[in-house]
Image (cartoon, rainbow, N blue to C red; front, side, top):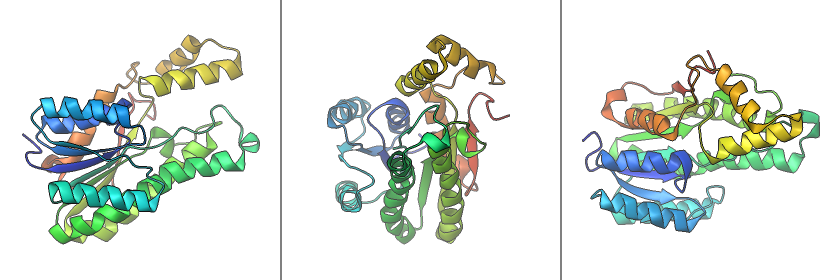
Length: 259
């Protein structure tokens, strides 16, 4: 197995792509610490992972709260002895189909807080252990909107562009310690979040959700929507030794939306 006896901490693990990332890492041999604010889905995921013969720890956490993040990292380290892999998958979408002049400042700040600070804090507190053991893999879940402009999504796009800069900078700092830091840029991913996005866009445009969905599909070179397992497979590559000489990079999985 590609991750035999590795220990992974995944934020945003409760549902969607975070859920599938965790199961994929477990199937490849990793033990996991599962972090999110919503506890019942984490407990259910823990049961799924244990059925695969791997250990799992539920660590409820608000990743924008530094004290909570410190407790999360400490508890994971106490339980498993170390952290080899960090996947920063927690994040929010923010205002949808909203011109920049209509975005409330508190909404803009909340997106930056969740998507940027919520990636910075786990990274900050996991890195000392990775540096000490001279091994680590960090994957920051960004988005295709961090590669291009995204009309009427200024807060979200800004946060994802910032994640690119954060990823590249941290990669330079920790590379000499054999720690890889990369960003993964999903496009639109099938699931509850995409369904909500289509509904909100449709409401503001006077369209149907199906029309919005088809608009996205028509913009993709492959004419198919990414699913969570596609993202999980890419994460597996980035945290395995198959990508040992990749760092500071942006990997895109979006069906060709950004081509």
